[in-house]
Length: 436
Ligand SMILES: *Cc1c(COP(=O)(O)O)cnc(C)c1O
Image (cartoon, rainbow, N blue to C red):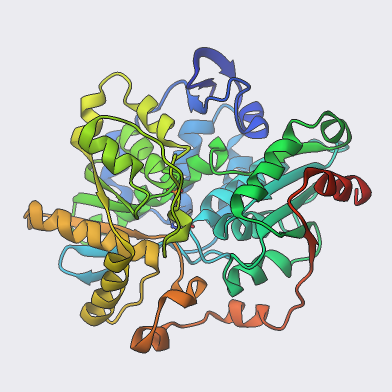
């Protein structure tokens, strides 16, 4: 597969180059030159396949020219080694649980696949790959655990001191091996600014082979299509063939992957993009005006994004017919009060605890279903993280009902290892140079 840039349709780069660059020099985003349409037979027989089988088939259609079949199969099986069950909560309402990977968030799909692809493309004897990643919580954990023990790679995570949850901090700081954590006396934006500056610093680029692991990397987007196909397969098994997806959205990578799956032929009736108060995209879908804003802090903080970086990809997917995008996707936006209320409603109705991001998607799905009554169409809302990662948002009976997975309990016994730094670039650069 060759890739072009959303800023330059004439550009052609191979998959390896697109993965290591993360972003083209022109600051666009990489997009596949051709989006293969999977054969009809694949969809009608989808219910016979497991998640890794589906994932391999989809990956092979996109990347068959770049990675030989056996190697791609190994990468997929190693990366997607956990379940993504579609759990029935009531008639025509299913939750797709994407949090059964090591960091308990859907970002494991992207991070684990990307890390293995990068490791695969690193030739023996090549310079070690240094991954720099700024995180507000979930990305860092997924990237750290995705690269943990992967040969010839090292990850440096920058996170804002006191601004990630306890479990997130444990996931970032207790790994050792090829993972190191920097606790920055500042905000997520400060962390991101440090990483961005490092990428433009000549001396650091001379010394290290730097790469970013952020959510715009094409190797993170592709594996996120897998679970849309797998969700559809699970509903087919129940005799359901018409589905609507509601997706809690921040940077719009997750829903972007869903739309890519649709382009590959997955017969989805509709998508609902659910956001918190950071409503740039729902406002655009309503008014036709795209107006990025500074992000505002909410309870669903992994979606606090005022200028979603993957939105240009979605616009690019529909550049030939922008009206199709408006027909296919609806935007819904909710306040923190709506979020808390939804968490409580979900608990009351199903005895189920949803994380704040997930609760927003449920609300958006229920509202959509009220407006479009159709007994033949099932709604699937994506659960992007395990509730135990966000303990501060729950209280009362809901808080008591949050279960702590055994692997998280085990983290409590491990020692936090993090180096504390300020927000000045000189300090960060000095650290990198002295600890090479
Ligand atoms: C990252 C994240 C999101 C947002 O996903 P995007 O792909 O950025 O839209 C939603 N929920 C959780 C828990 C996340 O970690």
